[in-house]
Amino acid sequence: MKLIFLGPPGAGKGTLAGIISKEYSIPQISTGDIFRDAIKRETELGRKVKEIVGRGDLVPDELTVSLVRERLAQPDAQKGYILDGFPRTIPQAEALGSFQKLDAVVDFAIDDALVIERLSGREICKNCGAIYHVKNMPSKVKGVCDKCGGPTYTRPDDSLESIKNRLEVYRQQTEPLIAYYGKKNLIRKIDSSKSPEDTHIQIRKALSKIV
Ligand code: ADP
Image (cartoon, rainbow, N blue to C red; front, side, top):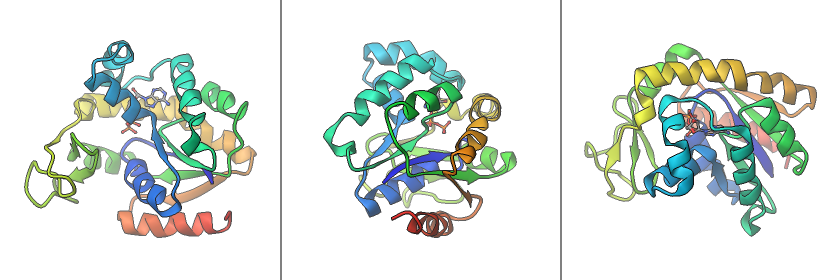
C-alpha cells in the first residue's frame, strides 16, 4: 500500500506512521528523519540543510525530490510505503506523481493551538527516534527513552519561533495539497486532535476500504 501522511507539524504523522508501518509491514519514509540524520552525522547533505531545517523553512524541492526518488528505488519500498513529511509542495507532489501511483493520502486535521501545545512539549529519543511529550505522553524516567534507554532531547526546530514559522509554511505551501489530492480522490480525512489510539482506529477504518 502506497500512502502519504499529510498534515501540519505536530499532527501525529510520525507517531502514527511508526505504528502503521509495523502493522502493514511497509517502511516509514520520513524526509525530516533523513535530514536530521544527515545533520547529526555532519554529511555534505547535513551541512547544506542544517540552517534551513533549524529555521523551519523548506529544503529546496529538487534536493528533496532526488532523495525521495533514490529511497523509493530501494527493494523494501517496492510493495508499499508511508511517506511522512513528503510531499510538502505542489512541485514535489507533481514530481512524485510522475513516477509513483499512490493508494491514499491521509489528511491529519488539527487546530494550530493544539499543534503549538504538542510541539512545545515534545521530546525525542536520540537513538531510536521514539516520540514523547512532557505532559501528555512522558517517558517513564525523565530524559530516558522507554524503548531503548537512549537519551531524549528537544528538537532545535521545536522552539516557539520555529514552530510558528513551520505552521505558516504549512498553511502556505503544503495545505494546497489537500485540494490537489482531493481532485484525484485520494484524500482520507481524519481528526488527529485525539489520542494516538483513537487516531490509529480512524486510520485503520480509512485504509480498510483500500486493502
Ligand atoms: P515537522 O512535521 O514536525 O515539521 P519533519 O520532521 O517532517 O517535521 O521535518 C523537519 C524539517 O525538515 C522541516 O521543517 C523542513 O525544514 C525539512 N523537511 C522535511 N521534509 C521536507 C520536504 N518534503 N520538503 C522540504 N523540506 C522538508
